[in-house]
Image: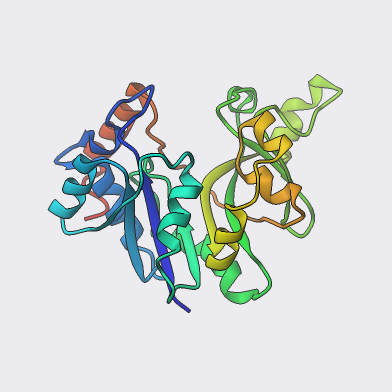
Length: 254
């Protein structure tokens, strides 16, 4: 069973222009992400998907695999599917965000494993417990609820589940009621190609969350809990945190 990780990387970013090429110590962020994904035991190959020549040249420069995609592709999933369509020998596609320079190979393996052991499963992703009210109420932090079989029920930018008794918030948070979504996806290749051809759904458009298209069309998304806190770089403040982390702990993913 062949597994390929694809990292979508766009140069344009409203809050941090040129994000994939910002320097963290001596390497551009896209190289940190690439080398981190390479540490996965279950991923056979890593490919960067970009529409920008500068990113393409940077990946080539550090010896990585990269595919140029059309610049009119609208979403990250569509960019992943464009590459997956060319990978006829591949069974599983891992979508790794290009702004997570310290993503753990072990965490990626945890997300891939359900598709290896359950042939009927089409999609898996990661979740982590929410431990602060700030995270719970931040619309940039996507919340998720799931059933007793670890299949997602709903994703939202709003706090879910809703608590009628607000004084219960701390106790329920400590008990593990609230979870946030970590945006790494593992797909069966054929399902990814099918899913990205489906029309955008009503809830997807309302919440601006692509994964709701999968649920609205009756498919399951398996969630895998992680305790690892990733540093996602989306703002200058995030970049400062990433640089501080790298400086404090050394080049962890060489």
